[in-house]
Length: 112
Length: 257
Image 1 (tube, each protein chain N blue to C red):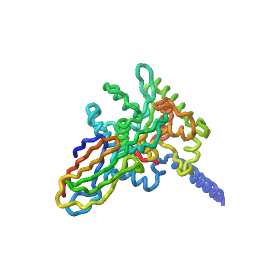
Image 2: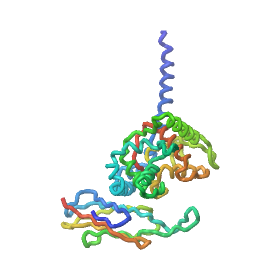
Image 3: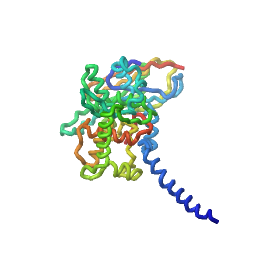
Image 4: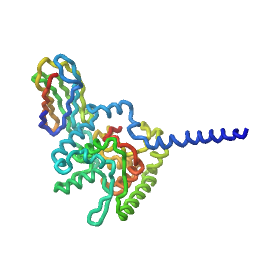
C-alpha cells in the first residue's frame, strides 16, 4: 500500500476479493472538516477546511464519488457496496480539501 | 422449636447481601457500559471506529521514532496501567501521566516536546493504551520511603480535590460519580467515572483527547475556573481516580459521547 499524504486514509474490504462478487468497501479519512463558522477561545475565526471531494477508482473506472460540505462531521466515513470486476489491479482513493491540499492512496487488489 | 429465631437472622443477612453487594459491583463499572448499543458496536468494529486512525498513525510514528530503543509497543504494555507515577529528577519529584512521559522521551532524545493534545502525542498514547487493553489498573507508590511519603501526599491531595465542591454549580466529583451513578443528567447517564478507556474519541469534540482534557471539561461542566493543561491538580486527580479504579481492566482507547 503506497500512501503519499498527510491525511490518513483507512481503506478496508469486508471480505477477500473475488471476481464478480460483491464486497463492502469501508473508507475512513482522518480530516478535521472545519466548517469555518467556529471561533476559537480567543474569538478568532477558525479557517474553513473541508474535504471537497473523495473519489474511489478501480483502475481507471470511477466507482464512488462524494462531494462533502460543512454538514459532514470530522473524520468522515463511507461504506458502499461494489461488485468486483473480473480483473483489476488497484483501488485508488483520491481527495482534495479546501486548503488546496490533495492526495491519493493506492491499494493493490489481490484476487482469491 | 428453638430454631425459629434463625429465620429472621438469615432473612436480614440475605437483605444485607442484596443491598450491600450490587453497590460495589456498580461502582466498578467501565464507562463502556454506559454507551448506546450503536456506539458499542462502533467501538467493536475497527473499520467504523475512528480511534483506528490514531492507532495506525501511532504505529507508524513508533516505527520511525521509538522502535530503536523500545522495541515493540507490547514491551510497554503495562505502562498505561501504571501511570500516573512519581518521577524524581534533580532531587525534585513530580507526578507524570503517560502523555507527559511521551514528551519526556521526546526531550531525552533531543526533540522538542509537543502539546498534550497534539495529534502525534495522542496517537502514541492511543497505541500504548491499545496494547494495554486487558491489563489491570495498577497505580502504586514508588519503593523508596521518601517517594512513598510524597506519593501518599499527592494521593490525598487528589482525594481531597475529588471531594471538594467547585464551580458555580457548587458540585464535587463525588456528588455525581459516587452518589448518583446510573441517574440521568440531561441526556446522559452518570457513570462512576473510572479512567479505563483513555485516551477517548469524544463525538462531542470530534477528536481524540487525553484524560487531562476530559478532566478540564469536567471543570467547565460545573462552571469552575479551568486549571491549565498539565497542571498538578489534574495529575493528582488522575492519580486518585486510578487508585480508586485499581484492579479494573483497561478497555483501550474508547469512543465516548
